[in-house]
View: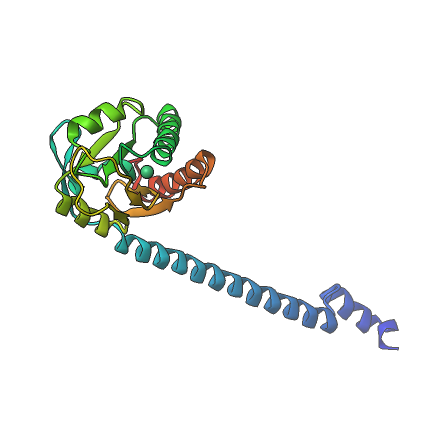
Length: 231
Ligand SMILES: [Cu+2]
């Protein structure tokens, strides 16, 4: 029994509990942990890259230059969206229920954001019914909603081109005249755009106020971390 000899005892004392078996175990666990963390780190990096790519992909394909007119009759282009977050909705003032409900929802959202962060979000209503929605008509309509709403309208061609850039569908019955009574079929989305005018997210009709707020605050945090400012 070598352990019983004085020299064996001395050896054991010198290495302590670090027997060959323990050493192998130590190396194995160490290697295992190293591989595991390297793998996790790699996974995280890939995930981050994917998120970035999908964001850039999404952002690159919604929006673009446009030139319209506000409810006060002033010119308004995509450049006027810069320097603030934007909540943008496409609808028409004669819409019986969906548009008023969505604009009410936007009003609540903008109020909530404003009470916490100040007026960093611009609500915008873009008419898909330019034949009837004159600046004056939109101005009257918007008094029911958030006071900072900007209403937009323009020629049929300009509105159509803007909607195309924003991937918004609408169909007006053919041959309509300003006084006619008709409904416009249109997609129902509230778009969130960042202060550089880049598309962030489209919220559908079923998205709740809380869900929009949650998403907005997540974007705002990321933006603030990256840019060092809120807008
Ligand atoms: Cu509508």
